[in-house]
Amino acid sequence: MTTTTHDVEITADERVPTIEIVREFDAAPQQVFRAHVDPDLYARWVGPHSLTTRITKWDARTGGEWAFANDRDGEEIASFFGSFHEVRPNERIVWTFTYEGMPDEVFLETLTFEPLDGGRTRLRVFSVTDSFESRDGMLASGMDQGVREGYEKLDALLEAHVS
Image (tube, rainbow, N blue to C red; front, top):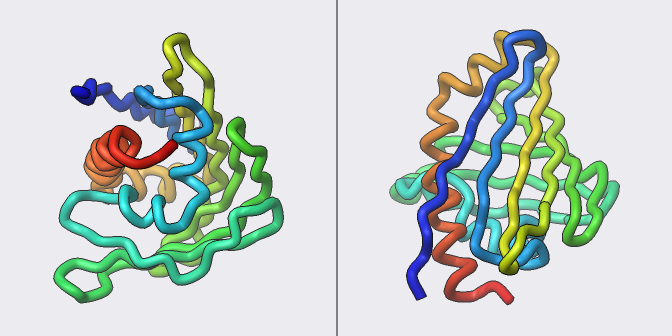
């Protein structure tokens, strides 16, 4: 089976401090959802190719919390944490996302898993923060590369392993 390459749309609203990410996957919503809530799977795909992810806390349920660290060549370079506000299986996740180095800058993200024809999924990630400075800092951080490369890894994972 050959994996189709899908473009990632990343949009910043000029009027409010939001980022929207839209990406399609050649897998069913339950598969894409599982890759977001199963800590072993999540660690295998999130982030750019140059990093590995270490899950340090993971309770993927409404009211749960999560944390992970990114390592490069065995050295921790970043860590993140948040709370699961809502986990609606195969449909929606609402969570907070905070970079430990900037703990006052919290993003609230809503992920929706939209079924498409042919057993495919459109993932929408809508992220809002309290300031344009925060939002623009996130965009300038290279997050677009991490998102694109992470979704490439997710494509391969979905093709090979997630049922």
